[in-house]
Length: 429
Image 1: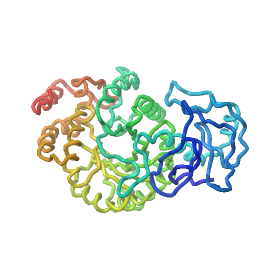
Image 2 (image 1 turned 180 degrees about the horizontal axis):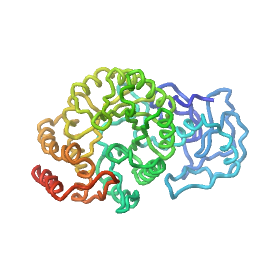
Image 3 (image 1 turned 90 degrees about the horizontal axis):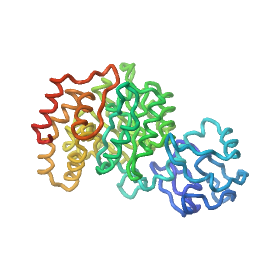
């Protein structure tokens, strides 16, 4: 049985989603071949023999078939690509269900990888050419705020409403369950449900990064697999920090290596010292950049020298650095960052995408002028007023912000007025 920690390469067998070949190079999720109308597999009972390609395995949306296994005939209509999300569960054929029940637990990462990698070719998963990354993270990602109802339940209707508005902004993708998503305050089942809801609404050309970091390595692996099954393209894994003094370089390298080995989707490291009190050591980052399933880091510390050094020291790897804040986005691009995960993009998404565009075109004076107008609003919705400030600002720009989940408290009227004047003074209101 193939090692589930390895990436996938295109199969020489025709029919997108029918078969996959295991390969050792990072990020090769490119798929080729012909699919029949509607994504239905054209042949449901034909077998792959395995002499010429012994590493081939059968795939359909519900189960992995080892090469050469006698597969019972299953009507084609049960093999259509599943619609993701809470409201679109398909009934499996009894033969499929019986076989699925015999899958051992170690197959789950491979199943998730196959199930979600195959349809993703249109979202930028391609074979690297030259220095091009295997999974292109260049662009802006808003770390979504999780909307809550007045009773502090996750408000999925409001979440879908915000997603409809974000669909018109040229984001590279979305981050779900980051720090601004009040990730620590969500129950495990809520985390998975939020990812499923976002995946269902997200345009097919947008990447979905989902926070899956937990304090233990085992819990992180389990949640990462669940995020992949819910439709995430990439796992964003924050540093464990409760036993901060024990989080040495060796401990963190071991933790992330185990997660990278087990994850069915690429992993992005997440260093946010303002929340964890722990900066992921740069020597750990350089070591982990060599792992075939670890493709980048979101660094929210704001140390431009550190970011530039990370870019320089990992330049021979398939590894990208993402700025963790709009306040230093231009400076990050100047030292080689690929993109930004910016809380302010929840409010000022178009201007941040414009800043990204100006930097890529080398229009530095225009980029500098725009960056200057973003610094104070960014500080206001991050360090100054935090998530309550971010959610309040979202309401002024036509999004649903709503309450935070306790113990986070809403802004006072005086704080809200100060926040509003910050946006007004910089020409945004």
